Structure formats: C-alpha cells, structure tokens
Image (cartoon, rainbow, N blue to C red):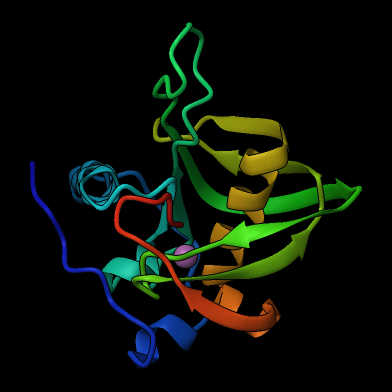
Length: 167
Ligand code: NI
C-alpha cells in the first residue's frame, strides 16, 4: 500500500487537461492501487489521477454500493478514458472534493449518467449510475478536463467536519 500526496486547489496541475491512457502497464496498475489506498485513507468516494499529480484520464470511484446489508459495501470501480454518453434528470446536493479539504458546497448534477470507459484490465465497460454514483462520475470526469466542483457551487463553500465523504 502506498499513499500518494493529494494536490489541493491552487496547484496548477488540477487545472490541466489530462491525456488519454494508451497502454496497460505495471506502473498503471500500481497507480490505480495507490489511488484507491489514497482515496480510502482520506474517506473519499472518488479520486482522479490529476489529484495525485498524474495527467492521465483515469479515475477511481467507490460509493459503497456493493451487494450487502451494511450501509457502505465496497464496490471499487476503475474508469480509464471515461466518456459520458448520456445524462438525464437533476439532483441538487452537497458535494466535496479531496482537493478542497474541509469544504463543501451545493452543486446541481444530472441524476442519471451513462459512461463508457475501460476497466483496469482494459476491457470496455458501460456503467449506468444514479444518485451519488452519477454525481461522483460527473465530478471525477470533470477533474480530467481541469475543472473543480467549486466552479459550479451555488452560493458559498462552507466548512465541514472530518470524515464526511469527499470526492
Ligand atoms: Ni474532486
């Protein structure tokens, strides 16, 4: 397990457009593992490669929607070169970001998203998400184009306590 340093707002790498991932390498697999470790350690539900300083079109997400009784059942997802195919509906709610620590704000997002990507084995996958998963997919994909949720916040950012979920 290796934790990577999470870049925070003001670091210009967060405003750059990331490059497509071209090949599956041991280094890429290690980056994916490190991103999950880093995300879980920080109680996040999503993390994009530029947040750990890598300008690659790669995100990891775990909104805890696995099969099971508990409130959070791990369901790790890897999206390489994600492409949003379809969105619909609307949801307005709290959002945070590991690159904007201790803050949250109200953001309106689609309530449904359909995304195409490669998984960590470079197999094409299509994921349909609603609610928090849709929010996380939109939020993480925007990181790959150099955007942070703070650009979309309605009203002011506010302080949040520790251990609340952040993306
Ligand atoms: Ni984020």
